Image (cartoon, rainbow, N blue to C red; front, side):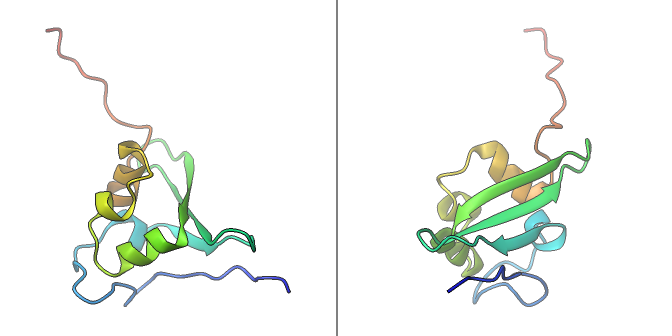
Length: 103
C-alpha cells in the first residue's frame, strides 16, 4: 500500500484555541506528508525571505498536530533548532544580519 503525499495547512488549518496571528509556516510554506510507512513525518518547505534560499524542515507528525492544536512553536517542535523555528515563524533562516557590536 503506497501512501500519497497529502498537502495540509492553509485557511482554517488552525486548531481550537490557536492564535489567529499569521506565521510564515501558514502563509508561505508547503507541508507534505512523507511517504514512509515507518515514520509519520512531514516536510515543510519554503524560501528564506531575504536570500531566497529553499529551506526544507522535516518534523514528526505528532509535533505538527500539537502545533496545529495551538501549542507554542517551542513546545510543539523542541527537536528543531531555534533557527528552524524562527524560519517557521518569520521566514528568516540563513539571512540574519551580522552583529555589528564591537564589544
